[in-house]
Length: 577
Image (cartoon, one colour):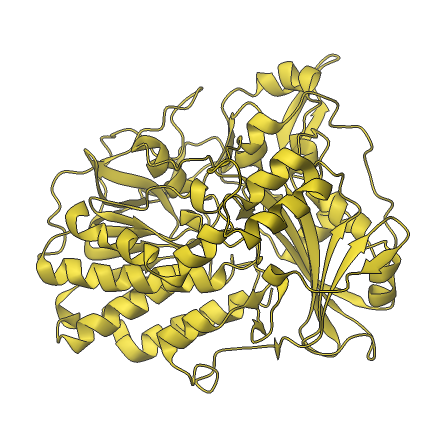
């Protein structure tokens, strides 16, 4: 197979009101081209596992040096943009690395020990008498996923050398297509001024022309979103998301033991909103805490960040955290739709893996093991495609066949209607219906159960109602302080990577019908209505605050906000999160 032999390529054109966004129409600009056999977009656990397994198979066949394999990562370093709880089911890591995966240095904070599930009211915490089966974590480990992917990168380089090129600080901004065949990706243009004009150091983004492109961008990947829309790859149901807010705290000795796990349900969420929280003891004095709030609850005033801060004022958390120190914080969306929300994840010249392919098991609150396994399957199938010199869907569809024969299908099929049940029934009734569906293997009276997008679920109302949680020193923090603890930095002299197709809508129709919900659902205080000339208001985008969670791209009720990659590789620094 000859690198770069996929034929003519043109970037996808997004049809977005107010201009083309994210994937640009054909231009006359002279661009560098780089040929590759395989291009991985994103250096998360799925793509790193895929590249690792691909390299292993080619090395076994004596063909590794004959192929160009590249990973492009938008963060300054691998792991910078990775955020997860996280409890990892190790079975996929065992398959990838072997039984001695920990002995080989995979970073683990603690083995899961004592587990407790609480149901909260505003003033009480009721300990459940048993652990619901999906939340049993015996045999799993507490990890920082950012550390795990950093270690995976080191293993790929140690085992495969320069045969797999990992390029950090290389955001991919466009999908390259030839008809219905993906032929690579375009890197972001560099050196544009704040107004979008070409600055003195302007450099057009290069086109990486690849026979096979693997999209492993994580939740709401910007290129995956374009590809799914352009090629009509959507699943039976649309995807639905939750926004998770996470903090790392150092707490005084004696309050927790390494490996201790809590999960809570109930307060401060309303019955109409799915979600819950965790506390994972990474050591005897360091804890990971977080709260995930579903975005389809319908309340225009829903503020996942404030919900997290309010949760911390409960006596259960106050007793844990008071006297401690906030170390890091961050936010990320998670794809909650499950099996029926999976896009078609294969086609001519492409695969979609991990969270980008809706492989999170929302009932278990786990997606690392499914991401790694999907990557392993992808790596094996890609190796076969290269060896057979055939990158069409005729070969790449083996990815779906093998994924469906793996534990991924077994897990996700049992909870295929999980989120839909809660969306239709509310939390109180939903947990009983979901439990029944679990016992019946996932099937209830209707299968599949339909669901609406998060944006469509939002009801008109006043997003400014019930605003604000009192900041308590040493316990709760405001959004701007949270951005500081996320380490998020962007060059303010570049164009905003957050694009609003019709800014006038913010000050008129959206303000009247919803009260500007973006001011609430954004966990980083990016969107702010400020005084305009005269008596009016206008939207100010504080894009340098952005922590790359993608909530705005998902929850905007008019669909006019688009998240794109920034040109400066900016964003959070989540190493250790």
